[in-house]
Length: 437
Image 1 (cartoon, rainbow, N blue to C red):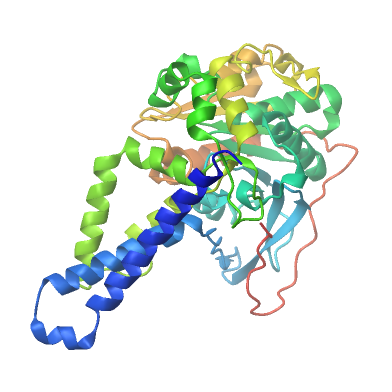
Image 2: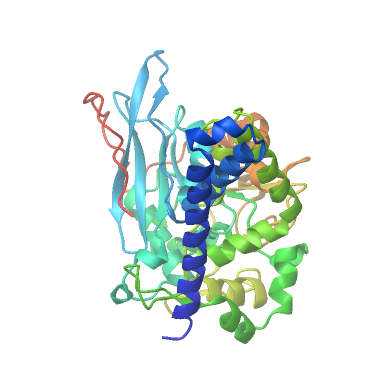
């Protein structure tokens, strides 16, 4: 059971810090201490409150929190989160808007499996819901998946995407964000050869590493420096007995979070110091800007070891996608097979995760796709988060993506037809139905 102890030690440290925060908050909040007028007591309580919340959020899957949207008629429409396809390692879910007829635009958002839950794209979903029927990939936390479910690597991930596209039919527009960009492109090329009628009408690829060598970042530099043996030794652990996936080899979310924090350590340290002072002064709230961001940012999930290692080796080191040498289920995926799917590339000029050029390389792989079906946009001043969920997405990129979808929505439907469900009745003030994880 190698590395299981290390996994449990990280969980023990997280649990202990949460307990220390709760203890400090409770002790410093005793009413009798208010008589002392000691300014350190409110600071101690504030530190405890922020610390407890921070470490508790690391093991909590965030709620989608999308209760309703305003429809074109000016009334509120409740939103249900409904599973369409359920699989061991991830579900395909739909945001069903009650009392609304099927929309012409049908969008599949492919969420990253890179340490955070699909809820990282909550604001992206919210921005698309008024104008589209929205589906999304909801990947599961590897620590909650029994070993008996088998393996899950980048080939399995690609086949999941191909199956989800088949399920939804060709009257579909796919938007992939960050990590899944190269694998979404591969899934489309796989369908082009195996089941052409299941291909989507368009792909929008946002800030993903199709060719990591096209532009250097800290991520690509790390991929070059470390060997696969070192990576497996340093990063891979076994899930402890506390979880359903006990014994499964994973890349732990807590380890990934440490990397996230380290990349911008000074900024995060300042953010937490300022939040402690706001709590001490009574200026913070449960859903203030700090808590909204960090409740999502700190919620991390484990990835299967085979998925993480195959991503580093095959996407970053061997560049199988960039070289058009990717193989899925024993079949070589040829990107030249994509001839009818419109493809749009979106990059941020200040993206330090997938630098400009890494995603744009996808267009060079599409050798048989007419130039009229290729498009690219470089957003000035935008970082990685901004191109799919920030100000740049809201003000500039979203309108461009919707226009691209509309420009490529006149293709004939496949033999499978449009699988859009009929309008859903409003069944009262029921709580939102979340897909099981």
